[in-house]
Image (cartoon, rainbow, N blue to C red; front, side, top):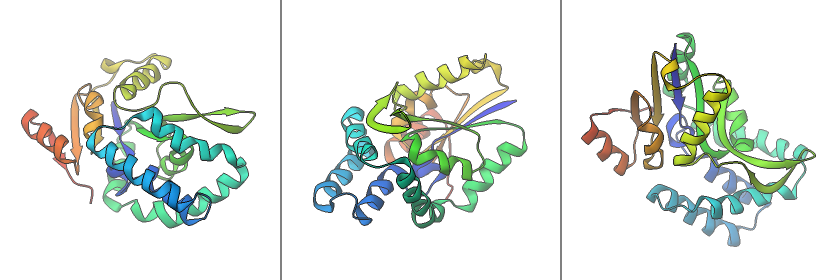
Length: 220
């Protein structure tokens, strides 16, 4: 049995669901364009550069969820899936996931993007397991705060190892461990697996992968 881990944004998706969710909320008129668009772009640039302050970003990203009921948010998310996400779910990514599932591999998406945004996307790929940054909930409503360790950089390793331990597993429980990612931010988790795969990588990850002899592939 193998363990196949997938980053989501710009890996399985040909775009960034976190960024697009904020853009979608701006387009819906829920968030003020003048206030939020420049911040959204700035945070996205910081993420790509590897300089993102995850706590500052999560404060920006999660607070708007607390201002609306889950029913309303779920309705918006259904439209978000139709308009923004499904066009980013390419055949090559779907086929890669299908190959692992057919082989009986344990498949997990490990993403920094919050679980409200990502859970329906992961289900649509047919993957049962998701490790994401979790928004705090009280009585079924989001508080605007994060619950637990954000699934970001070294936090992905922490969350992944906790997930394994909960199931009585560890890294060596598997014939092979694989992680597919596009981002320099995922170097800590890429370094933990047997087979790190750089997928349409950013410049920093590509350079690291070439120097380390890691596999490089494209899902575009």
